[in-house]
Image (cartoon, rainbow, N blue to C red; front, side, top):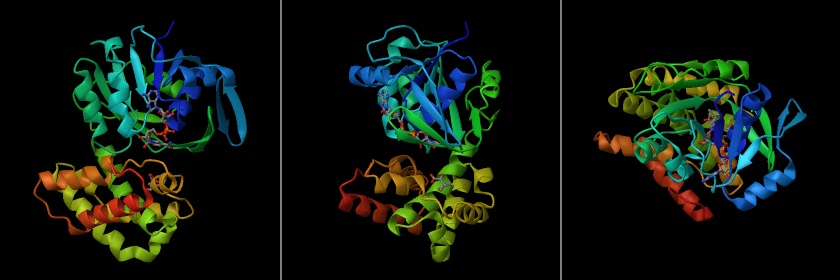
Length: 305
Ligand code: NAD
Ligand code: KPL
């Protein structure tokens, strides 16, 4: 029997991974938040993946927090702000041979998880795939993309990348994994907060060209200062390209705010501003953007962390 993929967090991305892995014959087991969620999942009869409007249900095994069996491979698919606490609750089931794959967007949560673990190997993943929940236990595969994986401490790839290929998960193992999340963080910082503040689709930022350009210049400066020159290259032109290519879409942060969900601000703009401060950089536009976004979230009664 192949090693079980324990999937922590059966939300959008976790369900997308779980369904594709299960479909290709991998052993998959969901770890759900509590007994109530486990009962609701069992009543639903499995996870449903909707691709191009066509639903397929997979009767994937699941367990609640009381399970005690060792975990060899853990895919962490919670939001960045939930990851460390969720992994800490499983610490006693992980050992030096365990591998923990972190799918969180932004930066900072990966270090928080690693600090909980010490012993297990942490693999970082940065993904441009898109998925959203249609209803409980139902996920829509909204955008094909690519996932970069890597381990900043150990360059050798794990032995399960073939399982990802067999599951149709487009990916690449890279020795330089930190460039990807930094680049994505910079893109997200240049686009997402402004879409929230101007309450617009990504394309609406075409009317705020100067503001976007100033943010990109500061973000590129930050990336260069913190040892990420590759992530800084042509940042502004890529941001403009993404704004154009996704003009009709609402950014993920805009969607979170409009649905009154907690955002990952702390791991995106918050991480960029904290890093700038640590390096003694004064990035006026970026810091002002954070102040405006925090005020906006406060006014809406949403968490600012
Ligand atoms: P989501 O909110 O849909 O799913 C997170 C799930 O984790 C929820 O079901 C939640 O109940 C569960 N969870 C939280 N704490 C838990 C715990 N202690 N035990 C068990 N389950 C727990 O979020 P998502 O959209 O799947 O995003 C997950 C991460 O992936 C985020 O960091 C996001 O930025 C990143 N990401 C998402 C997408 C996407 O298209 N959805 C794409 C790229 C990156
Ligand atoms: O990743 C994104 C998001 O909405 O989170 C894009 C589309 C790149 C905008 O920043």
